[in-house]
Image (cartoon, rainbow, N blue to C red; front, side, top):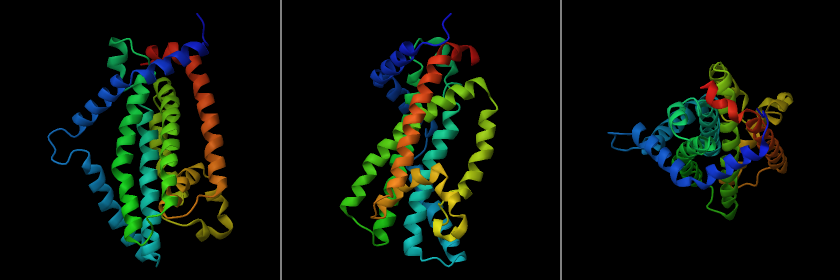
Length: 264
């Protein structure tokens, strides 16, 4: 039996993308089930984020004597982007395990279940990202043309969400401890990422933010909504990680695709 077949893996990915009616329907059904019998449906995502930003921003900004007009949009967009990152990582690890029943019963491309997961996470971002824009607008930022850079940033986030979900889905199917590791690791990274604090506050320890890849993903979203162009270094870091991530994940998928069903 061949253990590495790149052509089959690429065909699976291609077929999965073409079957958008399947993964869109599955994602919509997931969301309907999650918010069944609720009045607001997915709008609870927006409401929850508004309450979180309002309360945390007021307390944190007051404690550290920050200018709330500058801190609120900075923190709001940072939290929204971080929520997307943690959802991509946290739910991605169970993308194949959670679809075990369908994988065992229906011969679909495995990438369909990845696309399904990505749509679910993107719906969350779509519901919360406008809050960042409104907070910025309320604090006197924009609207301006620089804020249009948010659209390619969201596309980059979606692409990264895809390969992260696929990679973690494979690893999570093989090693069930990965989910617990991520649950422990991500809260720690939250405090090492400039969301509730600014890079300049670290002074000689600013390298903690510079060498944190999450910082650069947040910056390409946060800076445009704050009316500023992101630093070129952030685009370079994100671009390099994206290319390497897609390449490595595709090779791992080609190596393990035929085994995933046996790991579930």
